View 1 (cartoon, protein in one colour):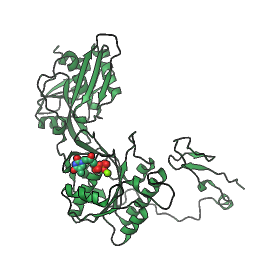
View 2: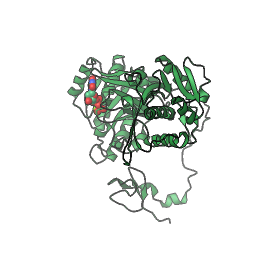
View 3: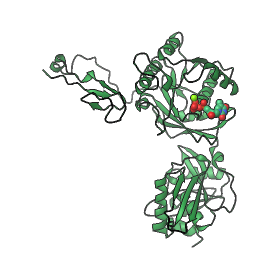
View 4: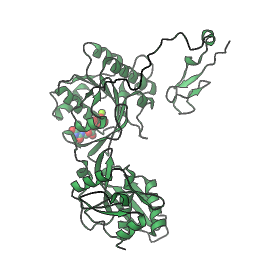
Length: 457
Ligand code: TYD
Ligand code: MG
């Protein structure tokens, strides 16, 4: 007879240990190891293989007819864009973001718009009293929207209430960290409570066809508080980002089982709530003056959406032999070091005795690799004290060899720049053959580009 081997599974990270320990050796969470009965081998199981005794499941062809899931627009176009066309019936969506970024505001606005459009929407607040939510709705001009509102934290109470009568089309839970399931022990916000509460709410969503939206707080290191498993349990994960000191907010899909993850929604936080920003380029371009050195405009792409941002560089020569600083805001510092190295090694420029500062205006964060050439333009302009023409944009990827590589969606970037009044573009040679209303200057190598910037050749 097979010996029964006990095993313990960490409820936070899933790692398996043969002995119980107070702290998981892998993820360092406390009190997450639980005995797992699944590993035990019974005499009956040992005698029978797994090829009989179960039910047959139906196997179907991959190309069988499917019905696309029904989408419910949130009434906020930028929100729908990030979701890939609206909420999906019976799906679970997690919205993560720093405290105070505007998650509650956004969801209250969406809930109110949907309710005003005749949908039944429930908003459960575990953080604020019902009166607080009501006052906020009034301030947002949505005080009369027929949203079903409750302040509650027990998932059993919430699900009991919602199971009476027709379930709502959308259910907002603000936030999952305040929810409590009485099926397991522990205070709200603990790993196991967050997981159990989410599981119960998601099961309700799937059974009753309600679209449930969970608000999740983000920890200091940027992950959604509670276990990472929360991200696996839901269908869609949205991140609500932005600098609190700046007005704009970006809603980004991180995971989407029903659509792409490359679309963003852009909002501006105003006195009367979150306003949609249909044309983000105008938002990120600061007031620009002719003759200023060290700045360029980069037509970035967010999904299929171009966003023009200003890239600023400052180069300060140091007299002494002190180690020069490099500081970056809004871009990858490793990438800056790489561009500086290529400018030194392939173009004969020297930054070794200079401090270098790089900033993306408006608090925007550039992730697009096509920013290389724009960054190089800002750096060369700052070093040489020659301004980049004010009516020019720049984009292109720079390789370690010094080559300027073409990037995706050149035409789209040029079109957006044209729309905002730019007349010239500094681009990879391969893009220069595109038909465009802009005058294009194409470059095969970064050295050619530097020569052009310095007025040589
Ligand atoms: P909130 O939605 O409560 O953030 P979260 O739920 O993500 O913690 O937003 C809070 C911030 O938004 C608060 O600091 C004030 C600001 N705000 C406005 O500027 N205008 C408004 O109309 C509202 C409702 C909030
Ligand atoms: Mg909130």
